[in-house]
Image (tube, rainbow, N blue to C red; front, top):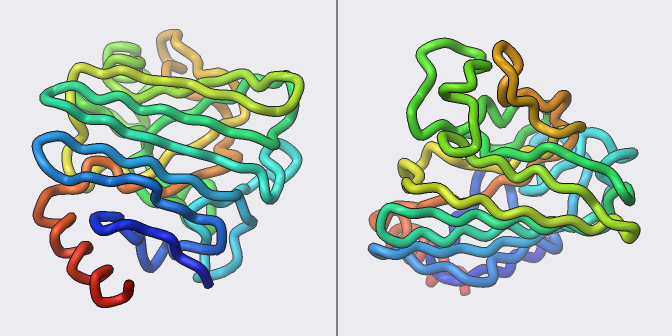
Length: 210
């Protein structure tokens, strides 16, 4: 099992073990934080999961690719999503979720919210909106490639944003349905806004491996 990583990369175990093709291409842990991770989607396979899993290979084929980046500076956060190998000319919903990906589509939990809705599931537009959450809806081109970028005037709470989930359709915005986008068809575990202490700890572990 190949793992390519740099010091400061977070290996999300046990529910998200890095598999062949998973790459952490850049990380830094300090007042400013950045991470870019890339992988190929695989099907869930018991306890040994890739960080990128597809629950519906018809919509997100096995071996299709995903890249997620985070850039946090001061009180602002930019999240980028790129995919390739998906169904051509199709719109998908996508959001940052609170849990890591698992064997089931609901394993990644609810959307990350800057201001948490006291009611769950959150379908109130006052909370379920792209300013309070991270929405990354995208439409693929004729080659099945797509991308999206989200800008938010806040930073993730360390350890509370742990994946990007791809949904079957565009995200709704109306009262009572805000934030819904149908089934989760794929998921990618991502080390969003790792704390400085966690980064040092993981860097120490990696230094013994590499």
